[in-house]
Image (spheres, rainbow, N blue to C red):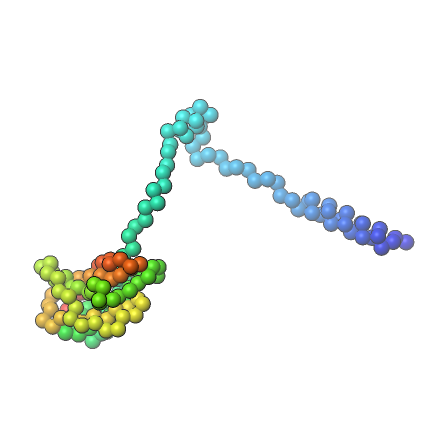
Length: 163
């Protein structure tokens, strides 16, 4: 008859043996992409230098969609009626504040800039602006707004056509 201590010792020994079997061999380092002899590798490492300057791109308003509120069509406008501009920015502090210089402009085909005549209450990622009466032809939308406290401008990549 085996005592409780003996059974406990056998279980512990069996557990240790199974744990030893399950250990994995150390990983091998992968071969270099361009195998070089030691002298060539030293020369290549001496010639290569990299520097991280920490430069990041400027954050600008990203216009994802412009919809005619009157007709409901995307990339169209009706003169004298409003358009809904949707922003794709998810990062940064967005603020459309008219007192600080935020605005929506429409660039005509001849390059003339026309500012929106009226604005609705802006949301975090939506702006409603009225296209001035008498505007005709193809238009490009430009939004200027505060992003992280600085005025930035973004342009809608698709030209709007009259409905």
